[in-house]
Length: 185
Ligand code: PNS
Image (tube, rainbow, N blue to C red):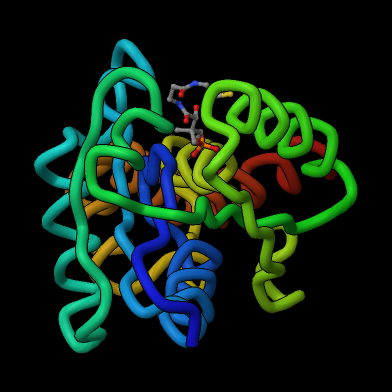
């Protein structure tokens, strides 16, 4: 167990099973893990910061050394303000590496005392990202297994019209293919 606090920063819009997997792994190696949500990362996020805070707090309620917070501005400044010594980031695939390397080196330039630590989530989450989850949900598609159940419910509430439209299309589908079949014959 590494003494002191580590910060796991991100947008978490929404939190995915990959994020949760990394939080679980991180909480096992750091004395304290602060999951820090960036405010204003996107002009029109799907979930407000308050909603993301609430979801992450619910998801980590049984992890005693995990705290959820939010921050503005430079991440390294926030990390310093809470005396964190490490930044935790996840790498899912080689495609993440370039961006993560750039970010880690920029953060080191800004604050040389902060060390970035990379961890890999379980391989079953290697393709899961908040962006793709949002895209699937916005089209009314299934996100089961990609996000925790509480997030799945919130996405369903948010994207209700998209899910209703998809359900209606599914109900209509047999009638439409019957119509097509008759037209052909
Ligand atoms: O979930 P994301 O989008 O991968 O998280 C990116 C995040 C929030 C970690 C990064 O954009 C960030 O730290 N932003 C805060 C502003 C900052 O410090 N920028 C310099 C980082 S190189």
